[in-house]
Amino acid sequence: MDNQNNEILNEKEQKTKKYGFIKELFSWIKIFVIAILIAVVINEFVIINANVPTGSMLNTIQIDDRMIGLRVSYWFSSPKRGDIVIFNNPEYKEGISKEDSKLYVKRAIGLPGEKITIKDAKVYINDSETPLEENYLKEVWYVNAGTNAGVNFNDGPMTFYVPKKGDKIEVKDGKKYLNGNEILLKDCYLENSGVEDGEKQIPDGEYTVKANCYFVMGDNRNDSWDARYWSNTNYVSEDDILAQAVLGYYPWRGLYKKADYAE
Image (cartoon, rainbow, N blue to C red; front, side, top):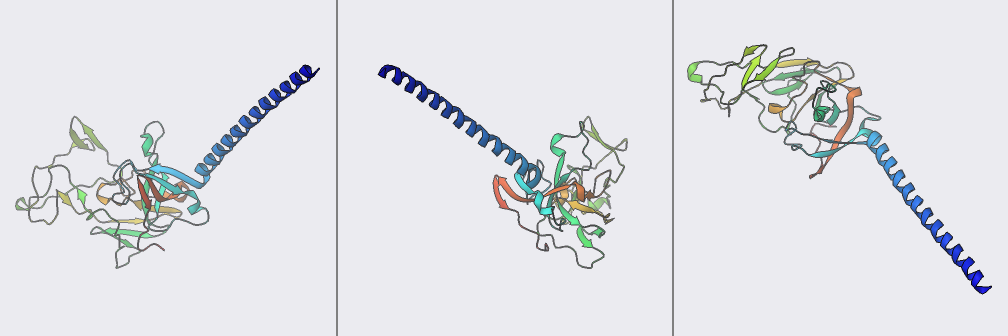
């Protein structure tokens, strides 16, 4: 009788242990699923994980830096001048464009309704006589004229054509073409110009920012494909701005410093 009772007790203990193991397993699965759901919700609605694969935001953001953007920054307010914004690339074409060009990271310079004037490599807001103080720029703002190209002032003036909206640039067999015509650059050099490495100041330009839109540029003005050069538009819709880039985490950069003029 005692043996029978012991067998019954052992069977109950085994069932209890088995039930306890299953209960604990489901408990861990539940925690794991909840953690994934929280991560998805946070990534979808609170933050965005992005990177800059080019040097367009040097020296503020280094090439291939990973960063965190806060979607919540613009839940109850609009982007401010000087914000580093993450947005949908207005020129991105599904199946054609590179996947890493789907999102762009640039600095908001022009706000809705403002007149932006670029003159002598300076930015002026609404006809202000004082240019925007941009201490975050990588270097003196010039546009590169191309490898081994420059200005030989002994040969007289030399002009540089900056592509405009509608132009078609092609590179084929090592040669460059503008609207079907080969671009020929003199193999010359800079002399007494005060400008380095075959570079010349950018041309003047004016932009009137559309309602609910922003004019954005990279901090590396000499090498940034931004609103100045886009073929379809010169502006980013507020609806396409996803987040404010606030923190570089890999490698660790810490919080991005705000522009001196930022509110």
